[in-house]
View: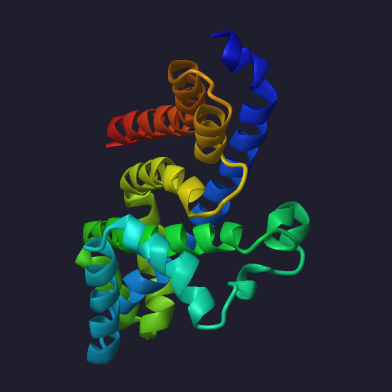
Length: 235
């Protein structure tokens, strides 16, 4: 276990980078998933088709394929995902600004992939909203957009918090793939370098990586359990 403590600074830096990837990807996935969910329940058939196609493609594609497209397909199309280098946001997540683009590619891939699952979780929340709520909103003259924004989505978000949390936990675990697609310094890439390049024993390295991901996922899981218990008591 001395190998773990001797390289604790590397694991700490890897944890911090992985945390940044997960936070940005979670934000992106929630935004994308919400937009796609609205498309899927839209009264306009082409929009419904677009939302359904998005979910079908990404939900049934391996994450490694999505990562491969982001890391190698985007450069082939002439893009380095500069659109993620948002002014102001890059002051908090500096790798959006100055680092090699693979950090942005990882955020892009995880956001696109997880957005499909966020959409389905949120759509289940929409289905949990009593139909009378939407009908009453239409009766008082609200448009579809106003109905979704002020009536349906707020209730759907509350109903879908637990499944959405499970999706985000899965996304955090999926982020382990990022290190193998050029994200320098995340937990999985740190572990790979220690084992392959420095010959450190595999067991303590895997313990360090596992501990890092447990720190990321367990608090969220406990929070979801607490929320679910409160929701059950409130019924």
